[in-house]
Image (tube, rainbow, N blue to C red):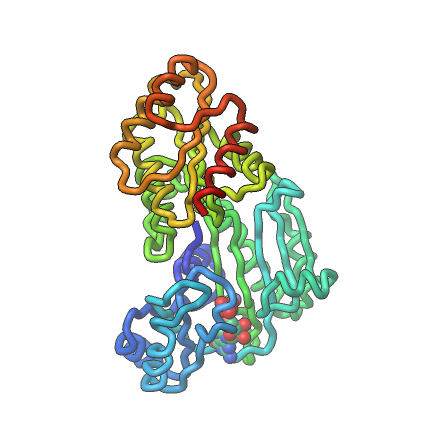
Length: 379
Ligand code: GDP
Ligand code: MN
């Protein structure tokens, strides 16, 4: 789950990272009032969960409350990479002497929380990684000991943090690290971290991405979810207890088990198709859950066929078959459905599926080929 800049800043501020959260506003008038309270020059910033807001016109300076209102009027309603801006953040403007990049990620390759740092901050780090990889430091941290003092110094030296600011920099890095660990984050990023004209360190932008699987441990963070910015089908899936990720293909996948769902997607691609989603229906696969999964998959107009791949362990194949037939009867939109059920009571499932005119398959290769063919015939 991605957190908005102001939420990310609230978390980092609690851990001692020097920054000003500012005030959010959803109307130009409210932005004006916020600028008036803050006083002096401010920055009006679009609160959307995509990067590169600055380049897209979503970050603007304003010298007066009048101007802040005007800038907010331009930014609210703006489309940034497919998201419409609903909220802006008004913060005191900083006088920037230097911009750094500082981030912590859960790096699967090094199997460790890893510090990423660069003195070429401000711009997109991906761009720097391509053009000048030597300008980026990657420092994996020990999984048990965590961030050590010598590592803090190493990062500070790499960045060329002025000597008088190294102590403050240690607070920034340590604070970001504890925020990362305590909130079970996948990413905590400050870009830019700046040295101001009057020689202070300040986090001007922040982004935290939380591990969805750890959210039950953090009801306070879960409450920061911005439903306005989530894929509606993913919200519906979460409410139904289904793991679902929307993709861009034409073949809807309904599978029990995450590993089997990944394999199913691989085989769809191997058969020349593109999956429309990842979907793990979970254990049991009862009729109401199957119906919810159908609705979520078919809500995507790109879906031209559905591939249902169920492995019956404790789940009984005949029950799933009944569930599929029952759920399908409630649908308002229908597409060809290819069903592969193996395992417990798979034989009993066959006549039920055949009677309902569903396409059946014995192997997953066969099922994927049939689904790809059916989707092709629809397109
Ligand atoms: P992003 O484009 O979504 O990463 O948004 P940022 O908050 O990082 O802002 C983008 C750029 O706008 C920064 O790299 C700065 O160059 C500039 N910017 C942001 N805040 C301020 C500020 O307070 N003062 C000045 N002078 N520039 C700012
Ligand atoms: Mn930024």
